[in-house]
Image: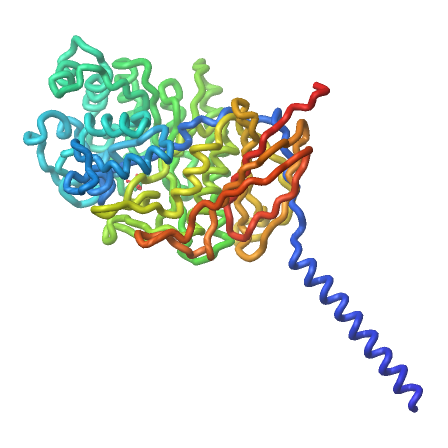
Length: 523
Ligand code: AHR
């Protein structure tokens, strides 16, 4: 009996130990996620990154223009009423191209209302946002602002309530040097030199029923084609952006196919818009949402190829993602002034990753919008503060240049309701030959766990000091505000040598690594 008891006791102790070993090894597996392998070859290039993907957008809406970029009553205004502090913050964001005057506003805007002596400019009912437009800011003030921040102007013409002639004449007013009455009108307004506005949009979101003058695809395409002809005949050097989709319900591809087929000999870009939201408070799905953006880009690329196969034209048609952002909390009642948090900033980083990964076809993108209204910069009368979404755009716009690289990514994934495979690490990369630098952008979509990655150079080595900039905060809901910043950039340097390094990407983070690259001597 005693003998049996001892054996029994030993067996129990043994089983307990076994349990502990199995449990701890399982727990260790959970704690240590599988390493993602990121293989980079500086010769495996997708295309040149067009700096215009770091564009922005200002609309006559809420406090974007009035009380944002222009605020003559502020102690921070310059002699023309533009906010000096805003100009500085925008310059740091390296905005390459600035879209104006809308948005929905553009579809009811008549440009003549906004030129000439201010005291003669009419106050008009503004139907897009149900307000009154004073026309204090018009074409010439917009151009002046663009020059102050160093951005190319990009004007959206009114193809809602406007006419072909009005669109064509706007090009003439801006771009014809002399010898016509509209060139002289501009000169009489104090601008003898032409503004040389290169980028023009053929209306805004004409696929949407909310748009003034909304039409079906066929009617829009025919109308836009006639406007396009007149505008290009006025100034053949301009580039035109046709309205693609801003909604993606059933049959959305038909709109784009029709527009491309009509406009394939005149349009240089097709515009796509996307606003994302986290209404369901579902972080993993929200973090995967830009994979839909990437699918849409690929579908439209196919439609472009299809349209191009039917024409002799050889100049390419590109995609202009000329409105993108997170937007769901603030509407007219709050002046569209969203306060962004860390998860929103991470989604912006994944938007930018998508644009870089598709650099061969996405040649323009405009965050909507620049100041106060769904914006990276917010103002009070006496100061400004930077939202969380400012920081990823700042890093990309300042440092992610050169050629986009196709990165091989192999690592752990997760599932959402609509996507069976979402990589935890969302990655884009570029090679900047001027700096001999590989730029790697990595968003860790995992809220709880740091994710390790082995970064491998398949040809050549990484050498010297690598710069690391990380956008992160205490938790995914952390926000910035006038009283301080919870989400910002933390920077450090590490020493690297050889063809690989391992890096641990912290939970809920966006990290940019800049690695000096050296060509192998044997080649
Ligand atoms: O950016 C805000 C609005 O969103 C724009 O006016 C419109 O184009 C889009 O629907």
